[in-house]
Length: 437
Ligand code: GLV
Ligand code: MN
Ligand code: MN
Image (cartoon, rainbow, N blue to C red; front, side, top):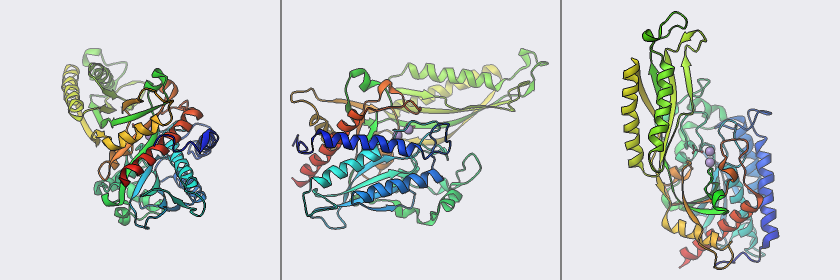
């Protein structure tokens, strides 16, 4: 089936990739921090703005659109001969960002999905506008909250799509004390209708996502694209260290119970323990001290821990080892500590069939006789982690020069985006061939 898109030609592919790049720039302007980088969080005015733009781009290629009950933006296109209820292959990624973000994480995957629809629709021939020549419908979904920047809980958008919304999430608060329920109402969404965002398994063929790698492996290999085998499971904790706030000048070292020093040793222990393990990575990304005065020994410190691993079992054993080490550190320093878990997403394996079609799609972009593309596990989290509860998931990675992501210098080249659009389109065609037989 390789080469089915040869009639599309490199010019169309490059035009598609250039449109993705221009639109990534356009969406980057929807930020809460103009002049100071990109920050676009769940249920914000910027979220509403990018949904409106993406909905326009969906309609421009003939899709019908709606914003779902969780604020995800969805476009749908029917198969040529299919009925309106035909199950859909979902293509997409997310439009929200971390603070001081890059412009491609998530966003490129949404915009590339639109180009796949555009290419497939164009290949359906005259007389079939607004349809795709496939045995299933295509939907493009722009998830609204993958990063969890605003409410601390990641994957809210995709959890709603997968039917995994939890009632206790309504009480989550952002940094200004606004609850998730209040933010829904402010955005014009009805919390009582959240269940309507959920897909039923029989409505879906699968979920396919293209994403930049967010690490250096493809760049180091000198390759453009990879098949993703699985997505690392993540656990996140808020750790509180309690000591005693006292005078910075008057308190001798022997009398100090300095919470910041305990927290600092804890951060170093996380690095030491995780480095010694295969495919486990731990990060302390937030650290605050209280009362936070220059002349007071810190009486309390709060630090975050993000712990990921290819396998849940080894990741959980590493958490147990970290907890034992924290007992030892805090015991030595006369401190107390506790951990509040706030995110727990198991590792997810990409479905073998979707790995095969992504591999076949990438092979179609390579010269005849080329080696099979790399198969990588994703150390970063993705919406597929939530979507795996309701359907099969598959992912394609694009080279990320220098492996820099969650940073304004994040990059992907136009030629790798063109290759990614081509591979993803071929993957959809392979899947269509498979589901016909
Ligand atoms: C999302 O990008 C994550 O991996 O945290
Ligand atoms: Mn991200
Ligand atoms: Mn992402």
